[in-house]
Image (cartoon, rainbow, N blue to C red; front, side, top):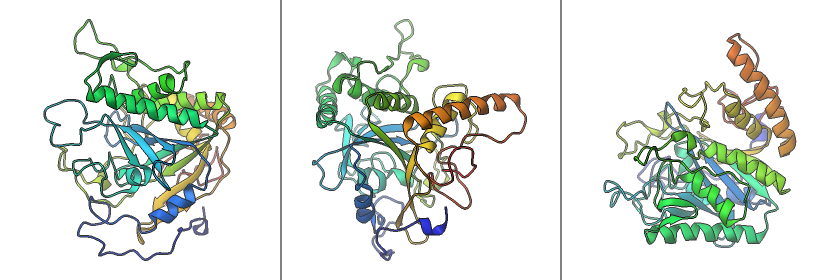
Length: 383
């Protein structure tokens, strides 16, 4: 994509003295044109946006998934529902982190770009708000969703919170106390159950991670994983005739913030920014070494559907929107992704250098740091 394909919604000067904290840190300034860019992106008439966050660990990295619902609850913005990693009843999390709700609800601008939280001073930067300062986020936009379905999803999330507050056990969506569990009641399961039970997606497969012989040991192979749930939902939405498109919110690479709660003190800018893996033979591999069909398919299909990309300009600290290729409808995107992933996974197994047929979403390049650039499948211009 040429430089002219980028634009800022408003040519506002970045005020370096907006706060004591530096850009990309809690309490620091947000992009000065955030409101204008958000308004421009909302001209797109989507109804839902599934937000898939990249992983930040070196080994197996499943990332995170949340759901933004477009409604009138937040004027000029969407409301994001995201499972709360710290709402697990562990004593070490009580009082140190935000644990009031299992399903947090925050405006999308805050979830992606905010540097202060409307939830609490205990909310986690880079997780509950300000995601793009820590990792990239893929937004799958869904068009044509009936209002009743959106209301049913929101109602189900409210029910999860009510059950969490009431310490309810053994509901039809979880066979234990309602609290966060990394494998058994995680982000992917809460989103999946909202569609399956709340919105009536009866054919949607949502796993129930099992214990071994009654012991507190969970079979990870039966856990719900964000990318796998996203791929299942893509098929469900396509079957319902809903339109689909993809936005990449690219990580801001300059944040020097170090989370004081993490054992390993690493600045956000130095954390891996890894496409969230499915549970496969690739799961423990390092960033950039996916060779499994399922991972390749997911990366390729999301690239093929790419409609917009959003990034922070490192010099001006303004948000920019990029639009550089024709987004494919899901059937075409899935067909080409399947062909490319099948061919490329075979070639990777062969161990001989080759030119991959597919293009992955989110891969960094020197000249085009955006997910929706290039000419489509078969090119090596990264999303």
